Amino acid sequence: MAGLGVGAVLFVWAVGALLGGGDTPAVRGTANERSVGVPLATTEPPSNPPPTGLLLLPGSPSSSASSATNAPETSPSPTTTSVTPPRPQTCPDAAIRVTVTTPKSVYEVGDQPVLTLHIANAGAVACLRNVSHQLRSIEIIPVHGRKPLWDSSYCYQARSDEVRLLQPGQSVSYSVRWAGRTAAPGCPVSRTMLPAGTYDAVGILGSIKGPRTHITLVS
Image (cartoon, rainbow, N blue to C red; front, side, top):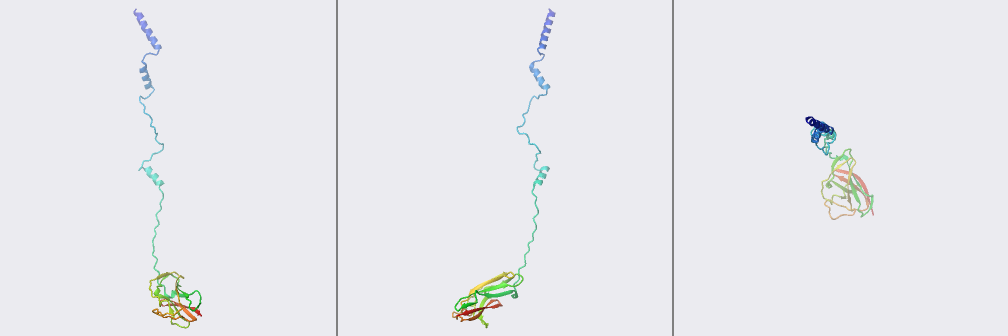
């Protein structure tokens, strides 16, 4: 009987070995996972992978070098020195030319010719000249005389302060209408119409007198 019992046990063991027994399935499965190196816990990969390339942080040597390379080149501003030009001198009398012109040389008695005084710089350099009203005038004198029959300053006593800078060859001009009559200092009311004849118009600036310009009155 004992031999039959041992034989039965051996028979049962043999059948179990053929069917893959020896360990429980749960234990075997755990052992297989460890043997092939499968981790017990896993971590999900990040949703945004890091960008490729080198990330430069502010203040790093590479960042400073990059900023210096990309910075625009600047050049130093030129240094300028302002020089004040010298003030022009007063025009000497020798550099001043004074003349009188009129639209025509012949007028009828009673006409009112327009006379224009021209003051020009005949010198080679720019200069200053006082051309104020009290210094300039036009006078009418007999063709063979010197005593004025009329002077534009006799009836116009206004004063002015007019200093002009005249370039070489530049002139300034002033016009006045002559009524064809006499006048005297103080501008008396009583005046005489000049008769037919030839007269001279002369321009004046201070002590400078210009050449004579002939004006003929006809009846």
